[in-house]
Image (cartoon, rainbow, N blue to C red):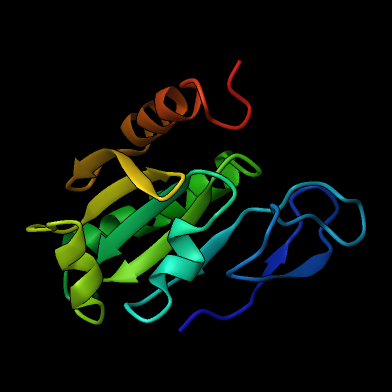
Amino acid sequence: MSTNAVVACPSCGQRNRVPAVASGTPRCASCHQSLPWLASAGDEDFAEVARDAPVPVLIDLWAPWCAPCRQVSPVVESMARTFTGRMKVVKVNADEAPRTSSAFAVSAIPTLLLLRDGAEVSRRVGALPPAAMQAWLSAELSAPGSPGAG
């Protein structure tokens, strides 16, 4: 299910292929600045795409029929840009990935999970407004053990 995304570099505008799986964080081929990292995963590739990431991972469990999910999706994608180089965003369609949803005991969507070293460290259920999501992620990504935490 995972594929390479094409992302325009926020610094220089160069279009780059960003793999769903990598050992480091994606960087622009032209200016070498960090790129937003947004991927999709399903039951078959979730461990490879999300659990084995070198940075904290924001998991967005959603479904296409869910209005709050559609509402929060652009906010989640915006957070990938806001926290470029510090986190990876992985979108998981809960209807198409029932084993992943079950593994995290997801009972409502949207559910946002933050994983660090493959383990859940924080969770939010429901559509968060942009400011609340940014505050939540800022606090979590500033916690000891996070890239860029000081």
